[in-house]
Amino acid sequence: MTRLEATRVIIDHAGDAAIIASLGHPAYDLFAAGDRPHNFYTCGRTLAAYANGARGYHDRPASDDELATKVLSCAAQAMPEAQAAEALASLRAIESAVDIRAVPLGD
Image 1 (spheres, helix red, strand yellow):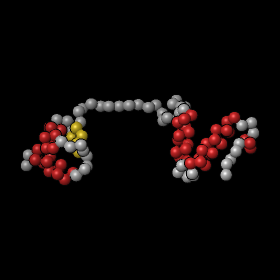
Image 2 (tube, helix red, strand yellow):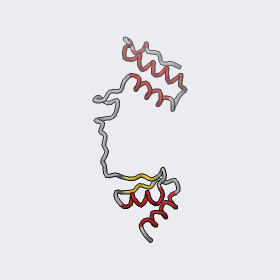
Image 3 (cartoon, helix red, strand yellow):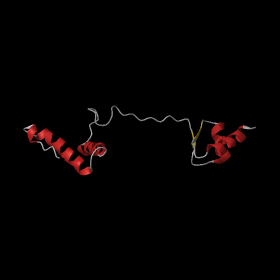
Image 4 (cartoon, one colour):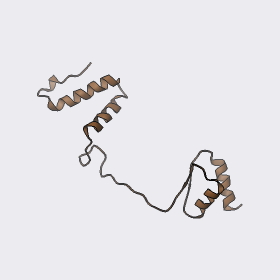
């Protein structure tokens, strides 16, 4: 069995699974045996992206809108949307409250 024939057997058994070919002949054979959306061909490049700390940490602070979206998204797992919005409003009121007891807690 040739390498190309073996590649065709792999494609026949892969179904919708991804097949990733390394550089050189394996990539050429994979393409020749039957290009399909689930084939991925490497080209030898190394791609990288760096983030120094997660979003929301001291070095990369999140905006008020980003924080609100995150709070509402997390709260939606445990309460209705209206209640989550009230909780967010209460959290925002804490910072400017003269007396914490005056912050509305909702129902």
